[in-house]
Length: 154
Image 1 (tube, rainbow, N blue to C red):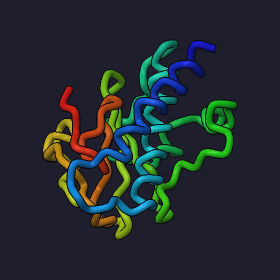
Image 2: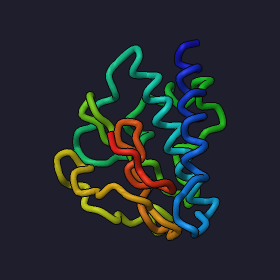
Image 3: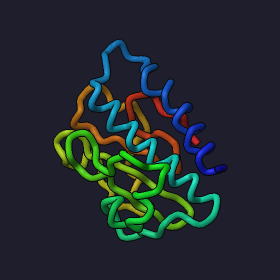
C-alpha cells in the first residue's frame, strides 16, 4: 500500500512540471506523454527502493525491460503502462544500485549526449529539452535533468 501512495505522490508532483515550462513555446503532447512515462518508471523505481536496491545495470544504457524482471511490469502499479516512449523507442535505464538514470532518446531515436561516461549522466547538462521532440529526456534519481520543464537540481 505504501508503494502505491509513493507512486501517486510522485505522479502528482510530475503533473505541474509538465505544464509550467517558462519558455513561451508550447511543448508537444508526445514529448509530455513520453516524459510522463519516464516519471511513472521513476515513481515505480522509488517505490521498489523501499524494499530493495535499484536493479543493477552498470554497463551503459539498456532498455528498461531488459534490466527488470517481467514480473515488475505485470504489477498492479504498472497495468497499462508502456516501457516505450511515444515514438516507439525503449525507455533506457542505467543503475549502479545507489543511483539510476532513465532516458528517452526522443523522436529521432539518436542520443543527444555522450552517455559513455561514469556515471553516464556526467556529460548531460541540466536544462529544458525545448519543443524539439528529437531532444533527449533524462531523469536521474527521480529528478528531471532534461525535460519539458526547467530542472530542479538535487
